[in-house]
Picture 1: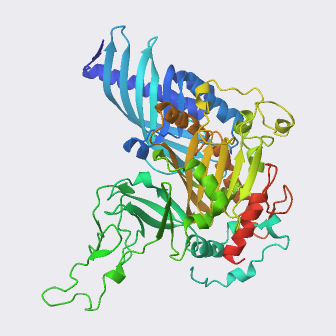
Picture 2: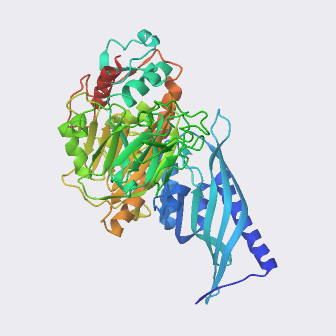
Picture 3: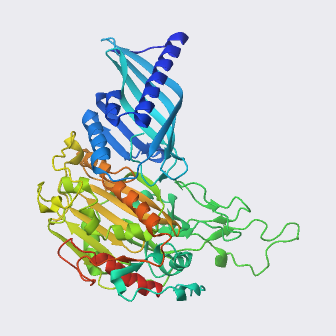
Amino acid sequence: MTTTTKLRAEDLAALRAEIDEFNTAYADCLDDGDLNDWIGFFTPDCIYKVLPRENLEQNLPLAVIYAEGHGGLTDRVVGVTKTTVYRKRYLRHFITNTRIRSVAHDATGGDTVRAEANYQVLETLPGEYTKILNAGRYMDIFTRQGGALKLKERLCVYDSEMVPATIVYPL
Amino acid sequence: MATAVQTDNLLNLKWPKEGPSRVPYWVYSSPEIYKREQEMVFGGASYNYIGLECEIPKPGDFRQTKVGDKPVIFMRDEDGQVQVVVNRCAHRGVQFCYDMHGSGKTEFICPYHQWTYNLKGETTAVPFRRGLQKQGGMPGDFDMKANGLQKLKVATRHGVIFASFDHSMPSFEEYIGPKMVGWFDRVFSGRPLKVLGYQRQRIRCNWKLVFENIKDPYHASLLHVFLVSFSLFRADNPSKVQMDEKLGLHSVLVSQRGEKKADDTTADIRQNQASFTLANPLMLQPEKEFPGEATVVMQTIWPNLMVQQQSNTLAMRQIHLVGPEEFELHWTYFGFADESEEMTQKRLRQANLMGPAGYVSADDSEVMEAIQAGISKYAASDAVVEMGGRGVEDTDHMVTETAIRAFYDGYRKVMGL
């Protein structure tokens, strides 16, 4: 039995702060950390997608990256670090405007939080100016596991139809 | 036919005496070449891929796309016919259609002076044509019929739309020739299609580098560690390269999946990961769906289309031009309208191979930009294209650059170089 909960203002603020903290750590992992740690932000049965807004709006299921579960995320990490050839690059994530769409409690005491945040990812290639690699919104479903929030689903929906040549790392 | 080229600078550009086994780097960066390509290639005697009929199923459905670097609209008119017109008002040249796609249109109205066009591109209204209070207006002999939107000649085959600025073009089938029609029909048998989604990327290199990338099996077995690790494409898999009967500008690379093994093929690949296995094997569980033994058929249809069939990923890769050293690749992934949900899922999962973040294609977009960086300022040097000899004939193996040579052999004829 799942119930949608209306949170008190202070609980909502605390939850929003918790998600902001989560996204700060997420960005730190992708920008300056170990890509292998990225997997730990997700539940084992997660869905992670990067897709253009035009596909979402036209109900077209295609994504640019589509990873299912820790296995799919692991494959993406191995693909990036072991099989793909690309120029060195640096990413810088800016994640803002967190908004909580809904919160639900189930009988076992778990939370399911639907939230969104804006993201902008800058990319710098050696010898070039920094450019905007991608900008859009995260459409997230968080669950609480062992007290900590984990992503059960993260859709990175980017606004532009066009992306620069290559998206190497996850967003 | 295409109009004559005005630029004399081309006279200074001489193809190397070795012929098709050399490609001069100026073809990838010269503004004169780019200009001539717009006239002789994209604006000339060619059929450009436009879109799929299933993208505009109903009268009044439309989408924008480009032919070379020229914006056009394709749409279905009230009679159910596909029309392709330029997105440029016949009056003052306004790009009158703002939406990238839409439906339910009965007419297009230019926002500037409200010239109005029907779904066949004919002008149906010119405000104040007869003047106002007996003043002004268009001349009495102004002919709306002669002042419609510029239209392209349209050809469709089994749900795929092509168009040409040259209204004297023969049929599409004659254009690509019987051998290429056979490969085309292997995927496009007439079975209704459905679009699964789009991917679009802008790549800073000349457009021909991506077109010839699909004609280059030599790189596929070396650069694409992922493909090789899973034996999706290996130099020793049964393979062939075929060109069309006329200019050799259309071609196919055909191959079949082999056993995953480490041997002298993989030994030549520096970065091979022999022990590489997927943690989520669902991503790559191909299912046979086309007649014959081939598991990958990459077909290039001159000048702007690559038809991708790698395992169950089906996509149209369409080239839009931006400038001599920049282009866009527009990917339309599709499946069949009557396929199982399971097959659609396979396509969506295998799509991880392709596109701007693809396990395979990301290698290509990175390398293509690195090629441009390497050659852009060395226009007087040439590429050496001698793998598999110096000829342009079909082969039954992959250790060859014959399709690239055939391509430039045909390209020179089209361009008068």
